[in-house]
Image (cartoon, rainbow, N blue to C red; front, side, top):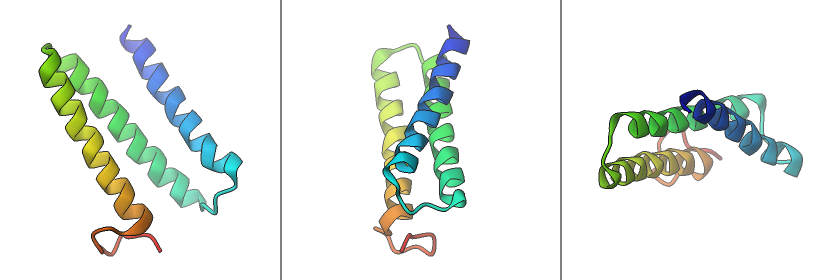
Length: 89
């Protein structure tokens, strides 16, 4: 079961990265690498939470925190909501 979830995570990352490619977004190859890394870290973090924590409430809370952090980093890199030097143009 563990290997099936890992395969699903990797397949989901590939599918999500294929969407902007098909839509014709103006992404450089580095944009794909960074987004792939962010998705991989998020997916593996969620997998780790599912393996380490047994309680449903703890799982939901910690996965929610991981996803919230992902969305904050994604938004910062995309449009610069916090104004850091890593912000997109």
